[in-house]
Length: 181
Picture 1 (cartoon, rainbow, N blue to C red):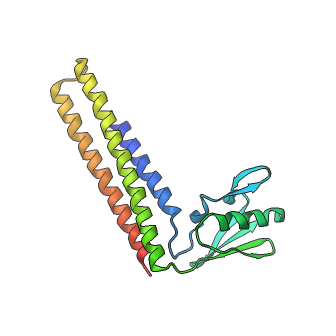
Picture 2: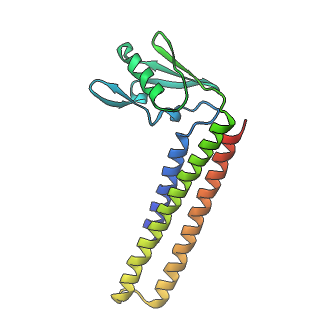
């Protein structure tokens, strides 16, 4: 029973880590482009499906575009994304120099990371609440003894506490990464 709950909580934490990867730091990371979609071939296409993305050094990302006819669309999508990077086109390659973050922008990104973490904690607490309700209903229907319910509630609280602790650890690491000059 609690295995399913644990799996859901682990997935919530994995989702948070994916969200954190899209938050920009001063180091180049291809996942910074994960939320950028380009108008290509009549639909919104993720930029990572339109070329090879690499990080030749810690301060730049390159996109080797497969179809030169959509380079302008990719450039516009990056400019409109709000990640604060100005693309430089060089033939079939788009270079993205990663500028150093201002102190103000670091604070904004740190607050965004905290918001993502808080949303994940809410998901964890909601999972706990729903699971506890289902267990109490089982007790009410005499499918579960009082002792079993107490043990399950104790286990669920431990799972919840561990998950929230893990979220706090991940947030601390991300904030340090963002605020590092």
